[in-house]
Image (tube, rainbow, N blue to C red; front, side, top):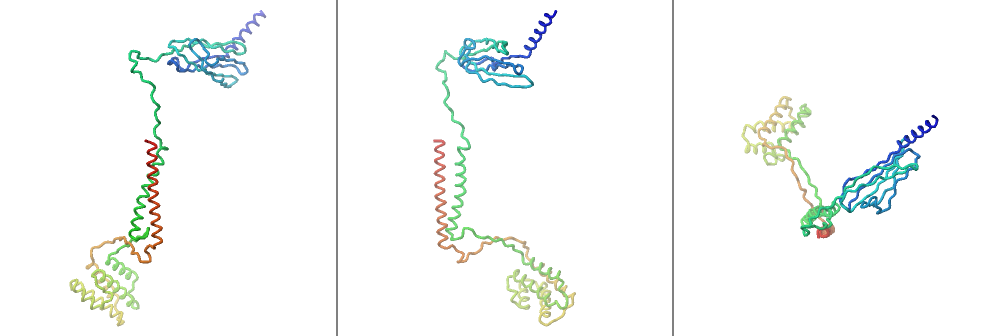
Length: 355
């Protein structure tokens, strides 16, 4: 009974040890064309500390007649959870069209042999039309790679440089021909219609309330000055240098009598205040101001505010000196030579690419 138990224990331990060792062989492709290559992958799983020996093959050694082992890889070892996993690849090839039965591979673990299962490899031939050998096409010529950005980038950048230099060169030539500086200052002037300026000034006088007795002279001086400037710009004669009677006589030629009478009264009152120290009631001041506004509104032209671009006139001192002209001429020649050089480089690059 004791011997039976010992034997049974040894048998169970042996079966347990065998259960902890697994070997597996896989092939990357079950069929291939003559001369192609496939991978035979051998995987062994065992307990850590066990000694594993995997099959070795020499280069060009037959694993089975007709199937050669071209090379084998080093063994990759992975340890995880007290287990070892070893993997090795064998590169196979064959040159006859048939089905090969690859024999089991033998793996030794602690002097005990384990075998993989058999594998099949189907080798196919390339179909050849032997009845029409003249139609057989040989290998294709080596095809050039597609052009890449690196082949064109210098051509593109140089072309953009030429497109920038040509307008600049043309501008410099024109400025040199016209004897003008390279850069000139352009001014934009806002043109306000005369009636708007006059009404704005009258509104300013009104807002300052210059109607007190001691301010009447200043009040009428500013009011008549605003009217004189408006009349000069609106009717085209120098009202600033004319007397009241001259202004009224000239306006009577331009406008009807009813419009001029109220303005005539305003100017006469202003002359009395400024030169005769005449005193005017506040309500009369307001009435004169209203008459001035009414005259402007009745005689104004339908104009709007505009912005005018003004090119400044160059004086003799601002004109280019001979030294500056020589410098500009040198810049023009340098730009022209640069264009020629860049264009020549572009042409050379294109010949190199497509020639």
